[in-house]
Image (cartoon, rainbow, N blue to C red):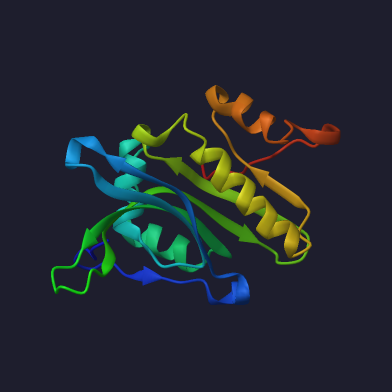
Amino acid sequence: AKLSAGSELYSYADVGDLNEETVISEFSDENEGNAAKRIVYRVGSKIDAADLEQLTDKVGWPRRPLHKVEKALANSFFVASLHLQTLSTTSNGDGGKSYVDEELIGVTRVTSDKAFNATLWDLAIAPEYQSKGYGKCILERTIQTLLSLDIRTISLFAEPDVLDFYRKLGFWTEPQGIRAMFWYPR
């Protein structure tokens, strides 16, 4: 990921020891000369606000002011993310390998009172990686992280066309008759 002019990377130090990086899948891309690639899941990593907005552009969300996205990232409890990494073999003769050309392909942002409740925001998976289990992966891992912190009430807001996806992962619409209420300036 490259920083855009004026954008900042944010990390989420209050998550403490929950910094995690796990390889979810590895594969070769025939369209790029069988380049070795992998999908990596992270919690507690740094996210570039411009990369987040580029991802939400791909899924068709309205554009948001970058300074507000930066503020939202900075004020999040933590962010879970998926990154596509391309393997590059070094040419220094030692046979070493390094991962380069990283791209943000999935994200969910979490706000919380850090005791009882958490809300998931901005769940987005790049269109070319949808319907491959990556949305389920990032949600299940995020929920497990919250449960490990004894946060047991997890909410989110969803568009009607994705309600079934969330239901399959255990979310309920209006559990126990709870109704969400909103206030908007007039």
